[in-house]
Structures are given as C-alpha cells and as structure tokens.
Amino acid sequence: MSILVETPGLLTTLQDLGRRGYQHLGVGPSGAMDPVSSALANLLVGNPAGAAAMEITLAGPTLCFEHDALIALGGADLSPEIEQQPVFLWRPTLVRAGARLSFGPALRGCRCYLAVAGGFRVPAVMNSASTQLSAGFGGFQGRALKRGDLLATGGPGERYPGLRQRFNRGTRPFLALDWFPPWYMELDFLRPAGLRMIPGPQWPSLPDAARRSFLAERFQVAPNSDRMGIRLRGPKLEFEHPMEMISSGVATGTVQLPPDGSPILLMADRQTTGGYPRLGELASVDLAKAAQLRSGEDLSFTTITCEAARELMLERAARFRALERTLSGRMTE
Amino acid sequence: MTTDAAIPSKASTLRVEPLGDQALLVLLGDRIDPGVNDQVHQLAALLRAGALPGVSDLVPAYATLAVHYDPATWSAASLGAELDRIWQGAATAAPPAPRQVEIPVCYGLEFGPDLAEVAVHCGLSEAEIVARHAGAEYRVYMLGFAPGFAYLGGLDPAIAAPRRQTPRLKVPAGSVGIAGMQTGIYPLETPGGWQIIGRSPQRLFRPGLEEPCLLKPGDRLRFVPISLEAYEAFTEEPS
Image 1 (cartoon, each protein chain N blue to C red):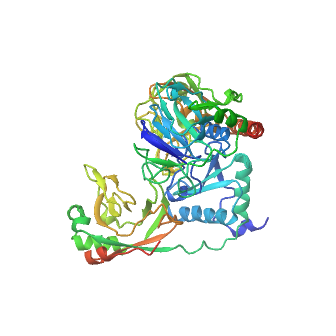
Image 2: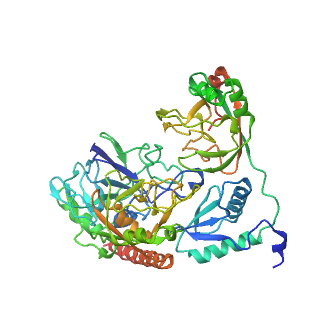
Image 3: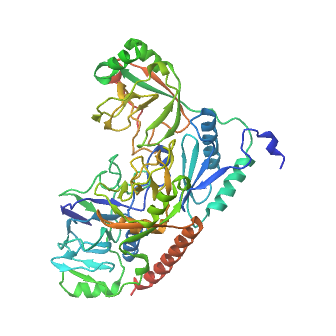
C-alpha cells in the first residue's frame, strides 16, 4: 500500500506523538504540534492514538493513493478535496486507488492531520516516527516530504464493513461515513485564542506593570514562528534587572522571555534545555490550540494553577477513552 | 529517620518547582559548580535505576534535573514527594565513577582554521594551545542545544578566546571550538560562531544506533591529538 506525493505543500512531515526518553542527550520530543487532532484522526481509522500522521501546514500537498485506503483528516480546515469534491474533516473516508487528495484555501487553523488506516510505515528512530527537521532524522528520511516521495502505508483492514460494502458497490472516488462523534469541546479554535499559563519561577520577578500587560493585552503570532517555537509580538516585557540564568530543562509550552522583551512559546521541535527566564508553561490542554494559530493571529493569556491544568488533562483523557469505546463499536458496523 | 545525619551534603528536602503540568524541575543549586552537578547526576542515576512508572525523561542540566511525567500517574505534589523520599533514602555512597571518554582530534590544518587566531589572541604558540586543550580533563555538565551537544567544563583559562565576529554559515560536524570559557564539539553541521581549532573524525551523534550519542551527561572527556593520517585512517567501531 502506498501514497505518492505529487506536490509536497508548504511543510508536510510525518509526526507521531513525540519522542520520549532521549531528552538527556539533547534530543527533543518533536511530534505533532496539535496532538489532539492527530490522535483523533488516528482513532477514527482504527489506529492507536499515537500512530504517525501526516502533518500538513497551511498549503497542503497533492497526494495520489495508489491503493484503496481508509483515511481521516483532522485539525485545520485547509479545504481538502478528493478529485475536486470537498471532503469533510473528522470522518472515516474510504478512498479509491488512483484518486488524488488535494487542498485549497486555508479556512481555519494552521495544521491539518491525515491519518491512514494501518499507519505510515517508516522506521522508528529512537522509538518514534516523528521527523526532527533541524537534525535531519526520523519520519520520512529525516525531512519534509518532497515531490515524488512514495510513502508506504498499512492496509484499510476490516474496519467499517458496512461502509466498505457500499464503497465496493459504487464507483465514486471516495465515500465517507455519515457520522462523526461530538468532540467539538476538544477543538476550540476560538479567536482571539485565550491560552492558560501556569506561572513559573521568574513570573513573580516581572514588574507588576509587565505582568498586568501580559495578562491584559493581546499578542500576535510573529511570522518567524515555526515548529520550534511561536514567537509573540505585543507589549515588551522586561525585568528591572537582567536575570542571570544558567541553562536548565524546559518543557513543551514553556513561555520564555529573552532579553528583547518578546516572549517565545516553546513547541514540539523545541530544544531540551534553555537559558532564558521562564514566565511559565501553558496548560498542556491548550497546546493544540496554540499549534493551530497562524502568523498574525491574536492570542491572550490567563493564568491557571498546575493542579487545575492537570485536572483538565485528566478530563480530556477520560473523554478520549470514552470515544475509543464508541469507535470500536462503530468500526464493526 | 536517623539517616539524615549521615548525609550532610543533602538538603533537608529537595527543592522542586513545577515545569508545567507534565514536568517538574528539581533544583540542587543555582550555580555552575562540579559539586552541585555531581548531585544532579547522582539523583538522575538513582531515578533511572528506580525506573519510576510514568516518568519518561530525566534531563540533567548544570544545577537542575527536569523530570517529565505522565499526569495520569503523578501530580506535581505526589511526584515531588516521591523524589524526595528516594533522595533522602539513598545511601550516601560516592556516586559511581564517571565514564572516561577520549575524543581524537586533528588540530589545526584545514580542520582548525581559527587555531592561529586563537594563538595570537592568547599570546601562545599553536602547539601550546593544542597542548593545553588536550591536556585538560573536561566534565560533561549536560547535553542540550542540539542532539549530542555537550556543555563541557574545565577549559584552561589561558586558552579562552572570544567568539568570531562573524559566525560561519556552515561548521562541519566534528569541529572542535572555543567560545569564551567554553569548549565543545559540533555534533552536526550547523552555523556557528565558535573559534574552530580542530576536528574529530569520531561522530558524536548517530540517530540510528541504540546508543545514539557518544557522550552522556556526567562523563569525563579528554581530547587526544591525532595526525592527519590517523584522522583519515580513522574508522568507528562497527555499529
């Protein structure tokens, strides 16, 4: 089973939910910027939530399916089409051999995820299929996809037999399940995005006025943002005296404040350690929302306690488990 | 507990602060100091040996240890208490002897384009720069910045040299450089502003291997000068 990349799009990579256990060697996690959309798309086609998906950024690729495939798209709405017919996000969809998936205008969000039943077959590097772009390993040959790449995938299997019967009787290039689960609570791409931050050790050292403007004013996503970090434009925040920091571990979601006064939100391709003051860390449940922000879009911050952020994460995990149970029933229909 | 008296080097309780809702930071000091760093590696070794469930990454830095965890298994408070229990309960035996690693370096020539400039800056001969650089034992305080990049301590202050005014767009993998009081090896070809004095044929980062990085936090390192012939003849142990 395989998929041919006819045009690669702006930045298209394979990512799972990240590389664990190698940060002490300077190897960061990488992985899907929006882990929620990636996991949901995978669950829809019967894959484990942590399987590799294709991360598609703003301008999508053109992909030719060389065999019948069961796919699901999730995350940003980049106007996906199969053979010029619009395709819904969040629906298990059977695609016929020879059909082309392409993308149009980016309507909402920044990153779309394509999951394929059976998964993308790439060698695991340090136990992960995630592409690490700066060091050039993982994913498909350690790089973003290019024209002519042929991606090996698993097969569609026996999932959704009812859908498959209807698909086999017809000739349409694709057929989607006319049902999808109500998970919009996970996908709050509200604008301007309100992100919740757990205050960190240098937060109290920030002058009162700077703390007030951090919480009251809006920031914009700067154009030089990437998978390493979302750079923010907005009020300049400065300590009264330069903070002398020595390098220390950071996390995905760390809000760093470099001396130029513009915060950086560390994302999937972050380094493992950093030497800038830390204002705090995003609540993990808000990372997906941050990942869907585009250059120029607004965001603002509120604060949350570490305990409350963990509760939100546990509630989401419980909803995921419930969804998996629902889907395993649907997949046999 | 009566063991407290036997472990005078340990703080009464570990200083722990949240690093978001899926990691925390253990603070063992607040400066770059071999003794503090020893404690960081000692705690990391203890926790690795204990194989705590729901802990994915232990990231030593100069004076801190980041512990990344699964929030379904731990809260910041419960993990902090567990780390403290492990730390207080551990025997006071000296930390395990660090690994000794030797890195072959061909100094100067086309591999070390800045060796002459460093020599002029320091008022020493090129041979003296090499002798001092290769004469010291270095501590791998931590890895970070890029896969396999080691932050080393132990540079002879007499051969410290400022960064280049204009960084190079491409510094080959294996290049050995000096920047201020730091020395290090570029594991990958990257842009860089360090003064490059030599190059090692030894690869520091091989992502396909079970042990992808030659260096580990806490190692001791020596640079061993080699000739151009030895550089060209160098073959890594089979992977």
